[in-house]
Length: 139
Image 1 (cartoon, helix red, strand yellow):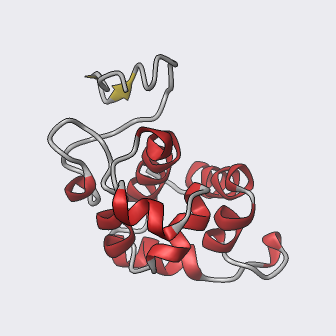
Image 2 (spheres, rainbow, N blue to C red):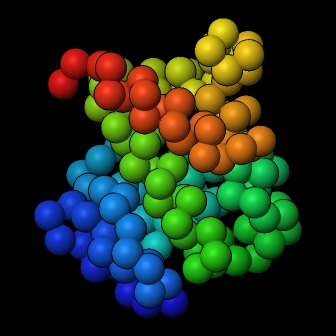
């Protein structure tokens, strides 16, 4: 895996591909980042108060894989996107607890499922839903 270079809170490369996921080391989920900038997905599951099996479905892996390889390169893009979105929600909702509650709350827009459920079924749909909400909230 290529190193993740942070500049102006932007990730420029991940596995050789440019990505625009923002990360800030002072954000609510900063503890899930390892020294080299990778997301430890077992820590992410713990901090989001979800089972590892749930996190596995979000990331498209098995719980056994995540347990054995919590910083695997193959999960980093999605994990970084999720960390970024949850940090944005925590900022908008004035706290990580409120962001987690929002992630787990069923909403009509998604057919009475939660954003977390949507992330497990179609990651892109869940991320888009979070992005719409963050864009609507005042700074």
